[in-house]
Length: 323
Ligand code: SF4
Image (cartoon, rainbow, N blue to C red):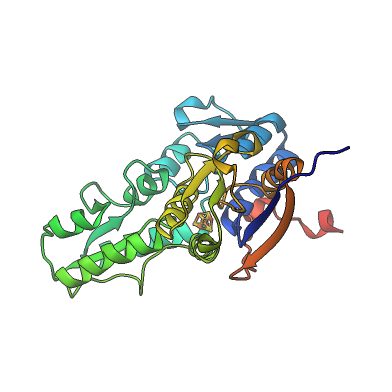
């Protein structure tokens, strides 16, 4: 007789997983491979997900950290979704590289904002995490010293601008909405003339995924976030769940990382995925639960997303190829 499996409710957060910027970046690599053949060089992980990077590598993408790691070539060189400092396209031009830029348009928007503040003579504060490629890219839009990084509310309390009346701020796109609101509140209190976006530059996908986690956190004993450890927006989902009262929240790369020991005696589990994690990994996680539990699946939808970004012109179908 088959053993009866214990009941478990899985609350599936929606939206979760791929955002429009990640979808576009992956499409750019795949279309470039289809059009120009392998190898296609990609500077930095195209998006922060091990599964995505490994599958593109298997199709012929070659991932490098710096342009210096790429031999002289006519093959495409792709910049990752996180964006790059101005020095990177300049170096690529110098080497006459054929560049396809997969920078998310929402990151490019922050670059443009920062450049505009700089042209207007404002000192710029960037709210973000030191060392993240997006932060390196945004700071690298302007000359050294033009942008100061603010990581915490304590940093915001301490910062001494050159002229408090000539100050602006921009933010990384994948931050915690709540943490960033506290930092912005400190800056607006200390520097009432500071110029910045209405709230911050956190993108729609980061905001929506955090809101969905907040909606399921009170119902669950454990949240699993499918995503890789380098993924900023995935790490923030773990923190959001913990702060919303979820006793256990874990980042997992896939079904193989499910912390079964922590799930014993739990009646409900939440599942979400960071913006760079493919849905197939979520499906595998659910399948692994079905093998051990009698699963009832409930999707909790807090927003509908219909955003899509165009790929670069070189990769769009020409009228003849589309026919
Ligand atoms: Fe763009 Fe946001 Fe996705 Fe980053 S998380 S690629 S900013 S849509």
